[in-house]
Image (cartoon, rainbow, N blue to C red; front, side, top):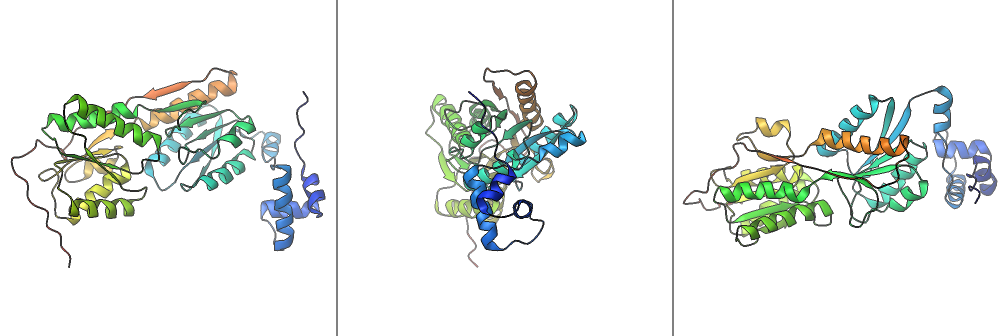
Length: 347
């Protein structure tokens, strides 16, 4: 079966009834084009499935090969740390990277991926926005080699690289249980993500094995502001736990902010285990006990997996799960005999 010819910029111009220069101006944003003409060009681009071949000029100039990386957000230091790890890995082997953010939105994810694919990259690394993975169909249709990193929707048939989320959560849970904590609150970002649900599953499993009741769970949202507000409200209206496990870096900061707002001390009043391990956690007072994800390894292993598919033509799917470690510091302590009541300052 003959390969379908890629639509050309001339075909777009013909369908839109404009010049090739006008199409180029609309797609490149180099000159102002009337809204009517721009709408006709965009409709033709969509109808034909046209993608500008920006890679052609790169190949002619002999520039380095390109890997596209799409992450949910550039505000989250976890994602930018992964990007740094990927960049370090690919540059040592003669590749460059181009990076885009989905802004935690499925439709934006599709648009950003389309823009990245227009460069005809050698391969793609993607951290999906959510379990729906709205961009998957487009990614598969592009026939570009790709690897899915960190956030893995269920029943996904693709090369995947992530941490063992259940094991990581069990480490946090077992640490608090060993210190005598029985009333534990779990602070999640959102249960719409499979990796967060896996962490909660691990915690529940650890509590069952210890013959303890299930911990309470609060969804605190994806931003620091939301996490702080949600948690402060919950703590002010519910019985205080002796320990808290925060399942993301933003929820970790949100827990600290909320406890400070309520005048609660860590670990005297509440012990805290955070997720992700950053330099500030070692500089905070007290220092923060945290689950450390092997971020550099995630980037390096994702690249190794993608490189095999690009260069060796590997066909079997690769599934890699990396182990996290627990960094024990000053924010966790053995349960005391008494706890101070919460006092809320409404002034």
